[in-house]
Length: 365
Ligand SMILES: [Zn+2]
Image 1 (cartoon, protein in one colour):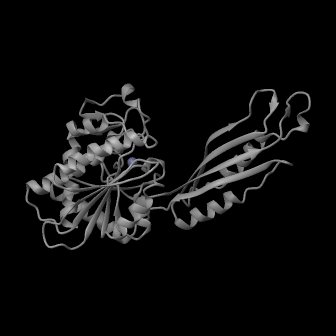
Image 2 (cartoon, helix red, strand yellow):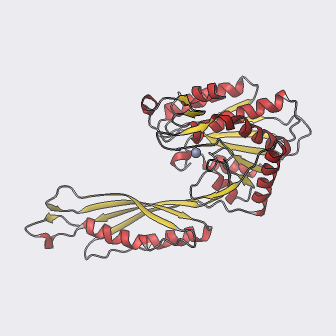
Image 3 (cartoon, rainbow, N blue to C red):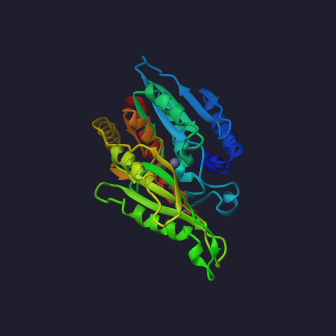
């Protein structure tokens, strides 16, 4: 498993680098083809291609299980040269090990194990590996949703939660907004009153945005990127900000979006333009999701292991499928830490048990 993970990680696949994602997709496709799976490349013009891999039921067919994962990473080409794939202290380090090339490795070994042990599988298994999860899934959302509608359950190979490898049975919804302020430039020392300070206006808007935070309701609104001005002695006529939005309840997402779009200028003659809004609905812990988790927990218990569940503020493509009402179990990927950072890694000892958990779900759902 580590050898294959190394091969996967060494093929860099930054979301915005179509050639890189496509090359990695081809590598993953070869692995599945060599096992006799039906592999289809779903072409995308701008983003990388998606892969749809299907493995037919080996026993009397009773429906379909969808497994989703993504080929892309947050690391631009060249990151690997700075943080190469390496194994140390029982961990495998490298860009994308945990989020989530390790998850793609688990899927291959889960199917291998089912075959080797001659375990009958009653559902068609569809593995959908997409190309743009890390940048919002605009190019693959429709494909994910269409496939989910045909499925009885969705299993998501995103990283697990914490050192104990908990599954994710609740995820916040995610949105992002842009605030663009236009003012009027003037000499900062001689006649500032002739100008309209866009940075000042933006600061006031940020203060308003902060008031939308509601910890109790699970709403966070954070201004994360700001820019403005040109040189230090000019009243700036331009400023902009990016805003990250998270919410636990679907209705709160729409409410926050309306509030942000209703922001109006505070300083005289300033202009404020708002873009963006809700991107992913929340993954809410329905009884069906709790039922899937109970099955997973039972499977782990049967081999003497414990399994917990957690809620997270991060979104995934599981948010889309859960919002359609299709039971979705997320965080089935590797145990590890440091996603999106230079110390990203997976715990090697946990790789076989996570593959076993996935195999168990594929065979018994
Ligand atoms: Zn991910």
